[in-house]
Image (cartoon, rainbow, N blue to C red; front, side, top):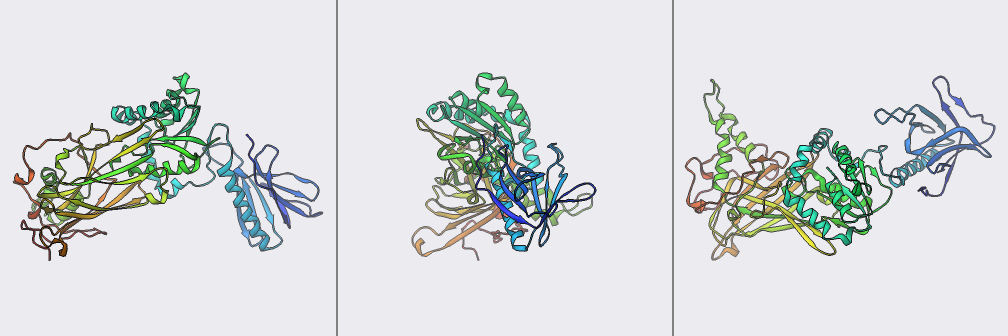
Length: 540
């Protein structure tokens, strides 16, 4: 399909010369010289140099592989790619351009940038390719080492197997697609982060006209092999190796399908920042009012009480209380080690009876949210305690909705539901709160994205006054923590039922009120250091 470009633009020049390995070969100045932006004979956008009546032999530049640099106020050089070797580009051809004045030079550079941008973003391509002439959004916000490890991880079959063997996850996706054949039959589908290609195959089973499976890791090669060996479906699937921020597709999609919730600590829905890529794919490829599978995501949160977990974490730092470790006093690092262990979110499955209040939720509509909305997420917290106990932190899980035309399906990772490979996630406070039944718990969960494809979490929980006169009262206790979602504690044990209330069975080794800690390196919010007594007396 030939690309339609905007109207041609022409600029007068003082002179133009092609660089060679020896000397420049200037164009004779017998007549005025012009530069013209427009579509070439092959349908590609070109920069052509010509005199008033004829083109200059050989001076045509393909804008898909060209860059323009200023050498001075009225002189520039245009270089174009001279090698098709994808592993090593070489810009072996250069054309020097002399302008008549600075104003014409600025106008030419502005036009070059506009045409170049149009070529990169709007070119029609037969089977989809990767556009590498511009640095993508992904590269701008993700550090190279993190990206390398991320794609290495997902490029291994053993990790894909972990996800495929999660039958709750895979079965729900299959049901959501097959039960909504009306959304897929005869439609163009883009599989964002296709992995092994399983979701692309599901879409083809549901009658998709064509599926573009976009996968940036080496798993793309495995996907090609798997799809090729299922020819009845594979003939309608094209695997494209590249990032959704960079690839170009020959047509728009009627529906996007993806698993943007992340395997690697995906319990908070947004880790790995894959949701941002899902939203970018929506903006780049989806037709207006197109469908997204999944459509909506919700993060659920509730305070919990788990004495055993708290003591398990606290006791990890006891190593640093040794005063004579081969003649060395380790105690100066105890406080840092203690805070370090509590800065790790805990990934495991837990008994829902550990929750001390009904959960609240934060909804993200994938069809409407902006990429920038995911850079920083602030969630106000408010709960009413159902029981009197010690609150050890905040438990989190997620669910997503596949809003099909025929059937709506939910995929949930909630405690008490069949366990998935996502498990649940808990943020544990180093200083627990004491609450009574009916007491209000308030706070904030703040998540800030960082360049390692994850989030820094700031959690604050406060227990408000309760009982008669509570409306005139304020905060009794506050506890805060800072956690790195990139560095979790993989506990991943199956949920255990506790025979008795935990607040009636204090652990003999250590309690929160017995631990003296020196908070260090907590930027925002800062952990309160005051000791909380069993009486629940107000902090000074």
